[in-house]
Amino acid sequence: VEQNLLTGRNQSLSDRIFSQQTGVEIQRHSRSNGELKQQHEVLLSTLLLEQQLHSTATNQHKQFVKEVINSFVLAESQ
Image (tube, rainbow, N blue to C red; front, side, top):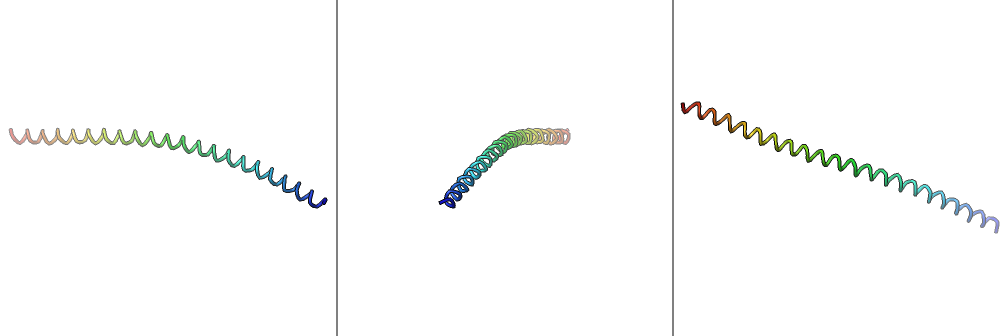
């Protein structure tokens, strides 16, 4: 009987420790998940800014090329 009480008590303590450790793990994962979401948002906004910058630079380059071509055409026609 005493052995059964000790076994039950040990199991209860083991369950409680496991539950506490699991709770800590869940908190750690939740915090980590939150940090990853923040990083994702920052990276996403950075990517969008980079795409806008690339698009603007591409448009400016196209405009510059048109101007250079037009100036050559005008120079040749004179």
